[in-house]
Image (cartoon, rainbow, N blue to C red; front, side, top):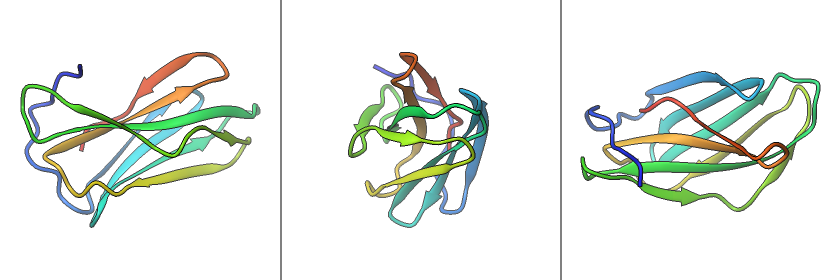
Length: 108
């Protein structure tokens, strides 16, 4: 179970990015939830999967998956909108199925 951040409620328009897995993993609060994106800045095609950890309870988070894994080619930006409504906080998880690694992004 994930540990919740101490941030206040998410605000539509807030966003954050971090360098992960040879690219940029970003999250933005949108009116109906959260847009998660990955800019593949490598020269490698990757098999990736987006997930989202979110919460309204300060003691734990809920993990939500998207519609499955996808291929990300060099130079591509891939994104997914998690239509779960705006919660108190959320952060993205990126699974790289090519390497078995998991990366977490910034909290909004």
